[in-house]
Length: 321
Image 1 (tube, one colour):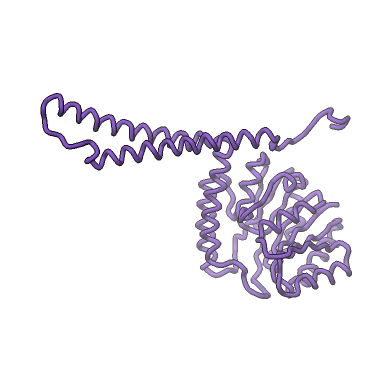
Image 2 (cartoon, one colour):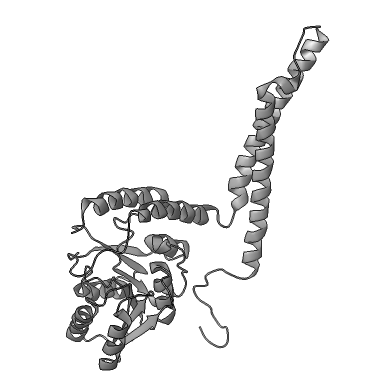
């Protein structure tokens, strides 16, 4: 099969028939063998009934239904597990992503031998309340991750099948799929300017809280990418520095006290100085950070022992290359 199209959705009953017809037309024009995986993320409208009806008319239309709303990341993850196409395309169900972009995305994966292609909605038809924060977070993401993409969160993306079978999308990490792809060892990442349509039906399912979650997820994925396999390098370094600063401060207070006693100079108790408690707090915090790094290292080593590395190829195993 050439293409699997994974479409996560929540309450999109009005747009599904039109989207299906549009996809069918594009696939027929280019002669692709394909499947469309609609992942219903716990919709409370008639989205699932529409999917059932569409699947009865066309065997290429397939559906997955969650018992409740888990979020876009969960929907994508489940769709990836069931996708069988050589190239996997993801797109939103609200008709803002154009199926006309699929053939070129497919070509870039096949002919340019890219692992992953991310869409870039260069011209958007969203209000400023969405576009300005989006530009800000995309710029921060480029700086932090080092991946030179303009639109990390564009729903229209293309993957080689082995890419989607390797990465694991969890939490709200669908915003940073390019980071997960690069972290898994797939470095051939491309970008394509894609058309963005005005929303035709319904309303957006995302509120302002997505920007807070997006920032927290960026911090999380950055930490995991840089220190997931070596937490001691982060916690141990900070812990050691803070402990040494606290120890030197305590040593200075103690030395000062002994100097005053030796020369008969009146001096107050060390415990009466606020610097003593600051020094003590630094030593305690430094010790805790060091222990946290040590425990994190143990957890990391335990994960490695379960062989969680991503193997690209094997030769002469079980008689196959």
